[in-house]
Figure 1 (cartoon, helix red, strand yellow):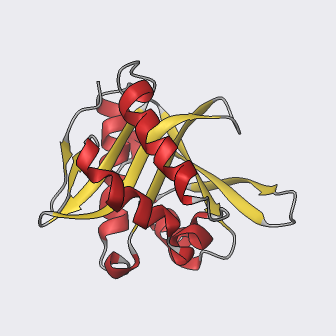
Figure 2 (cartoon, one colour):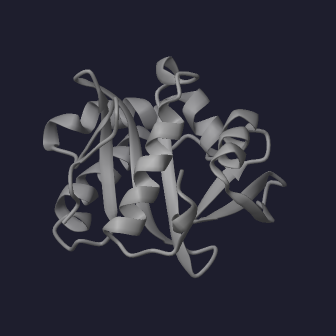
Length: 170
């Protein structure tokens, strides 16, 4: 069961039915999609994905996924789940643009890494960062992630695969 987590300024809470609009708005945001390295997904597909979290992912305990809350406001999304790119787990995060540049991304990743180590027993965690996402790449470097390889998409876009030992969590 996905636990509620807390960091200094954020609450990581499993999604509830009433969180659907925030989730859809975040993942329909063009800037958020661009920096996540994904195409914009049709709204109905996002709504289907949201409902799948409530009806499939949580009940079957498939992986941990949270809505991120700051001072009572929905500000983002986070996951820890197995990745198809390597034999391991990936950290996935997305923050609303109004919350960029405030250190919250670093706070999210540190909290996910502590959860991965303490609650999931993971020895390492991966991230996938768009090659053009200088801010996220700099954050990953500051936290101690190391570059594993570049993944080139069908459209020629490049994503940097990075990894960190959970023992190295600052």
